[in-house]
Image 1 (cartoon, rainbow, N blue to C red):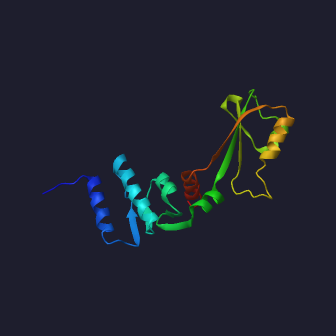
Image 2: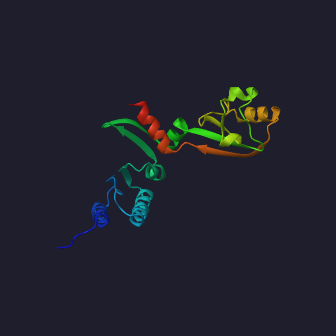
Length: 180
C-alpha cells in the first residue's frame, strides 16, 4: 500500500479531474496545505488551463492568489454570495489610492491652508498622505493637481511622490465588514 503526502494527493486529484478535459473545472482550496514549489506548479497548470479556454471556479482563502489569477471575483459571507464582479471593475470601484508626498523639510502639523485636502502627516512629519477615489473620472479629477499647487503656494518643497492602490485583500475586508 502506498501512502501519499497531502501535496501528492492534491496532484492526483487534479490529474484525475483533468483526465476528462473539462470545460469547467471547480477547484476548492487547491493549494491549502501544500508547499511553495507545488503551489507554484499548480498555479502554472491553472494558468495554462485558463489560457486554453477552461472556465475555472476557484474557492480560496488566499486572497493574493485570487488577485493574481481571477478575472471575476465573488465574495461569500456566511454562505451567501454578496458580490460577483469583474476583478478590474471591483478594484476600480471599491479601491482607494494613496499619494504619499515625501517632504524636503519636516512639518510639525498640516498647515491650515492645506486642511481642505484631508491630508495625514506621517513619518515624523516627513510625509503627507493624500487618499483619493480610484474611480475619479476626468471631469471629477483626483484633486492632486490642486493639492500640488497648494503645496507650492504654501512654500512646502516636495522631495518625492509615491502612489499605492488598495489590494484585493483590503477591498475584501471592507466588503466583509460592510455586510456584517
